[in-house]
Image 1 (cartoon, rainbow, N blue to C red):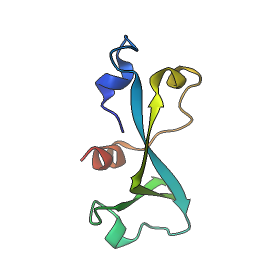
Image 2 (cartoon, helix red, strand yellow; image 1 turned 120 degrees about the vertical axis):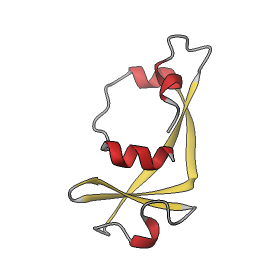
Image 3 (cartoon, rainbow, N blue to C red; image 1 turned 30 degrees about the vertical axis):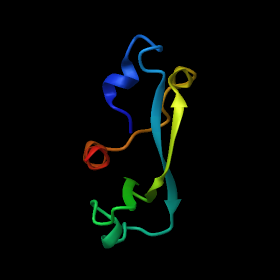
Length: 88
């Protein structure tokens, strides 16, 4: 959930950390209307894949040392629509 300029900054000492938002798989599919599209200020459900809904809670955010992102490539990514929703 960090700014993209923070994630790709070439100097680790300038931007040492990134913020993570935990997404927990839930059995609800499609997302609950009251937890989708920013309707709930504390809980957000996202369609991560056709058969996968992730639930994120605003209280479950962590900062991670940015150099850990260099250890392996991303396993997957959300679509543009869902990324834009998180940014908002």
